[in-house]
Structures are given as structure tokens and as C-alpha cells.
Length: 328
Image (cartoon, rainbow, N blue to C red; front, side, top):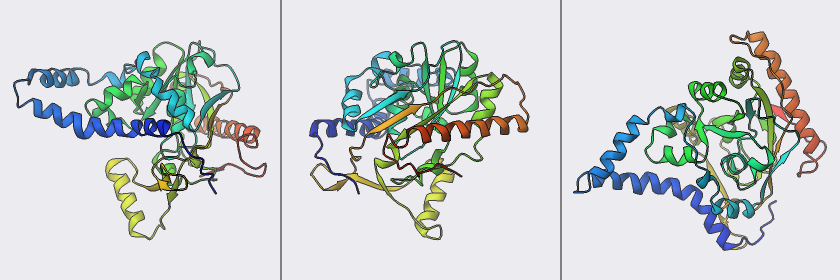
């Protein structure tokens, strides 16, 4: 049962900025741009849309991050709401590139976003010389304005060309991939440690092709931030979720957290500590065309490393000694 601590209202309001900013860009600013095309101010949106198409490939060519955006003070307020922190177990030498598995997905991936897409927890000081990129659905980068906002924070496309570009241009790049994806998000409920990983091997193949080291991470508390209503596979709601996922590549779920008043239910996440533990990098050879046997070998090694990471830290961050990871 969750402990309902009274949130600081300022932090709660600031927290709402994160989802509301995307909604405002999509439902207010974008229609405004279209409207301006019909007014005497039409050159302004026309210039943006012209630049938008000229800049089309940027999300797959390293993006365009902004140190200013990543250092906004708003991120530190949201960090303190939970709070969120990152724990380093081993150094990541900047002479290498890295593919980082992000586990679990959770509903909104708070830990990965605030640890790798902002400087709220001091990533650059903890891992000097490393440039983090968090990969997300490619179609987000086809939406005007939202693509620019995402790139400013260091978010990149999860497409193969985008990952290949980052792993083949310079060193010190770290590409975070939320391996469990939509399927894992739909199973995200408190006190679960089930990961969709058994058949997800593409990130291992990419790492082998570029000789990038694999980095396991586990975010404790990620699945505790919200409760989710799970539907039976035979229910109409489950079928709707499956259809929605197939059509849009995104997930539709029914979830709830806390409200502004003590003991109330709402859409604010529970104030639970969220800690991302970054494990020891797993060295991989560079093989341009790795065989399936080679991919399977390092996939097993990665799963073993992730399980050890979880077992070493689970008691410290709220799980019992008997709790185990389950890979689906």
C-alpha cells in the first residue's frame, strides 16, 4: 500500500509541466502556426515549415541537443518531488561508445528521462566525457516543434539509422534503449520485476556491429510511481489496447496515482524514491555481420549481468532478498 505523503504543491504543479508542455505544443502551438499561415504573419510559420523539411534528417544524424534546456531548474524541482537519483557502479571511459539497456519501462520512464535527458541528477559530472542519448519512437520526430523539444533534451530516434550514426561518429556516445517497450509498459504495476527481454536482441546486434560496450541499468521505484488497471486478454478493453498499439505503435493504458489533497486519487505520481543504478559495461568485439549464435551469446551474458545488478542492489532499494527478475 502506498504512503500518501502530502506533496509540496509547487513541485506538484511543476511536475505537470512535463506532460502538459507536449500537449500544449501539439494542441495549441501547432494549430496556431497553421492559423498564422492565413494571416499577414504567414512568413513566420512558412519559414519554420520550410526549415522543418530541410532539417528532416537531423533526428537520425545525432540530433540537436541544448545544454541550456537540459539545465533548466524545472528539472531539479521534479527530481526532488520523488526524489530521483542515479548511482554509478563503474566508470564509463569516454574512449568507447555504449549501448545501454534501460529497465524497466514503467509508465512514463521517469528515471531514464531525468537521469539521461536532463542534468538534474548531474550526469555529466558523474560520467565525464559521456554524451547520453535516450531513444524513443521515431514518429515523435515527424511532429513539428515536439521533435525540436525532444532533440534539445538529447532524445534520439530508436530507428536503426539513428543508432548507427551515433555509434559510428566519434566516441563517448551512450545510446539508451528502453528494451521492453510498449509491451512492458502495459504490464507495469507496483512490486513487479518482470521484464520483456528474452527475445529482444536487436540492441545486442547493434552493439556488436559497432563494437560498443553494453551497459545494463535498472531503475528501482519506476513501476511504483503509478497504479495501472490491467485487463484480461479476452476483454474488449484489452483488444482495444492491442489495436491501438498496432495502429500507432504507442500504448493506451488506464492508470492513476495521487491527487493534490492528502489521500486523494489523481494523475500525479506517487512520491516514491526512483533510483537508476548503472552497471558495469560489458565489453563486446566489433563484428560487422554477427552470427545469430554470437548475438545469442552476448544476449545471455547481458541478461546475466542485469540479473546480478538487480540482485546486488534490490535489498537497498526496497525489494526483498527473495525477489527475482523474470525475463519474458
